[in-house]
Image 1 (spheres, rainbow, N blue to C red):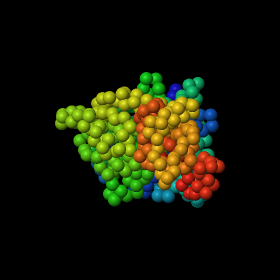
Image 2: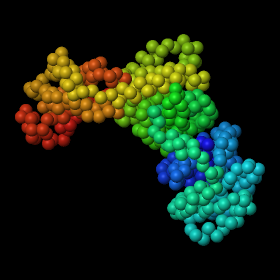
Image 3: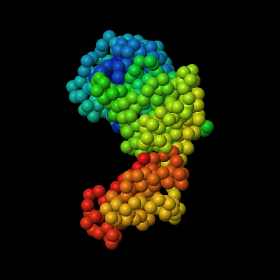
Image 4: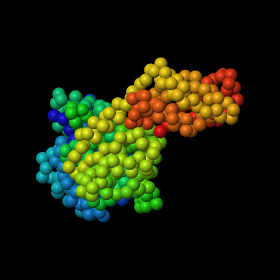
Length: 465
């Protein structure tokens, strides 16, 4: 069988997301005192002992959502329960049994599935003695836990393994496959309601994340695995971002932070725009974050079917993006319709091409020939009555491609000439659609530079695009 799924279920605010993060030993789900923070299924594949389990965090059962997304949240909860081999029923040991706990128990009792009762928030041994009272909800093994007090994590995992159905021969292999690095990690970023979640559902061929016209529906950064042409990918659905001054609460703030973290951990960023909307300040802030990390990027114009109806052309939108984001003029532009999946395969192929470019390495000999020809064709102008010199160049890293230029002094090279050299690199090297990072460094002990120039702050200068 595949890796067994463990659905973490219960009423709102019993600590389901905190429990997932605690077991995973990393911040996977957003945790906030506000009820109903978790809406989508948030998953994490955990190895415990010689077995793998997929933990599935679900929304609170019985939640009255402020955005009236109860039906969509309920659908995600039901899918999580239906697909689970084990149900982890979480209750609050401090509050005791509530009417909503009884409703959850009534829903779980008819199911013919192994269940583990977790009495959470037992921050001291005194509360452990009251745990047996919860057995009236469900006849199942009981474990008391406290995320805050770091109590009984090992006992919970050991009991979980006891309750799980026996493993078969394929489980370990499947688990290793799920935890193995995917072909590509793709971060979907953009402001609210540009269609990121809809596009991910099209890729996964499943209603994996909630989609809605309600702004801010997605609150977590959700990793969704999908396969295409026999290759495994991870799509990272990020919360939609809006203006900093409009952020209403901690949930939205953490959403903004998670969007930026997703940019950092992605192999390629897909920056989404709505074909029916003008570029906003939020879009510009997100692009600035992409530029800062030098992450390869594809600019994605979504809802293109509506743009065609409005007689908008690809050329006009591409020019609009180039004029707005000059620092990303090299980034390719894709036009998709997430709702129908139109051009989704072309976009993934384009992302793979961009990723491949960012990993290319160029020999030092070829690089120096290109630099030498660039200097002969357009010598750097004198500055402060001194001639800028480049002694040699070498590529020192990939992702992004990073080139070091040893010179007599970095500050002698004008910004316009450095932009010229970047343009030459982009034309001559296989880095046409990815950021290039150039470090200009004074050669140690060079007679034209002198020790004082080496030691001055700013002797190392970085030029990139």
